[in-house]
Length: 58
Ligand SMILES: [Zn+2]
Image (cartoon, rainbow, N blue to C red):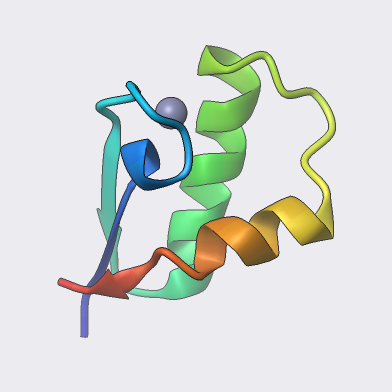
């Protein structure tokens, strides 16, 4: 099963999209994306939870 996430759901204006085999894999990609493209150096569990709520089956 595949899952996907649009960063724009959490960060208006961001066009980054992620797709992977598991929610954990997507969260890993998003953590890297947040750090590199949004300058978020400290991704908290609360943030991951909020982001994870937007992950849907692909
Ligand atoms: Zn983004």
